[in-house]
Length: 100
Image (tube, rainbow, N blue to C red; front, side, top):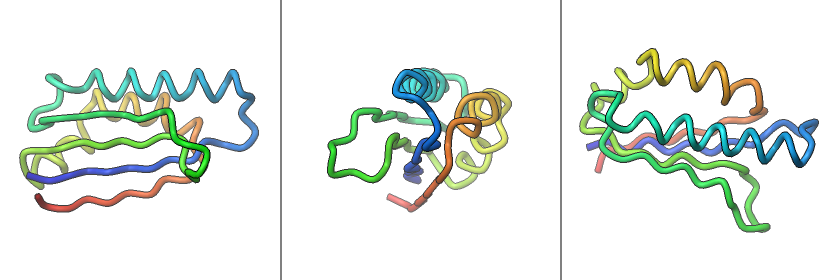
C-alpha cells in the first residue's frame, strides 16, 4: 500500500468566495475518483484547516501499490480534476508519497 499526501496553498489573489468555491470543487472532484481510478483504495480531501495551518487543502489518499499511484497520476478522470480545478487555483503544491 502507498500513501499519497498533498498539501496545497491557494492563490493569494482569490477572493474569499473564490477560495470557498475552489476548495469545494477540488474536494468534490477528487473524492469522486474513488471507484473510478483502479487501485485507489481511499481518498479524503480536507478543506477546513485550523488557523495555525499554512496549507488550504489537504489530499490524503491510499493506493494499493506504487504502480497504482503511477496509474492514478495519468488517469483521465484525475487529470481532468487536476488540470481543470486544482492547477488554476493553486500557487504551491507539496507532495509526500510513502509505503505503508
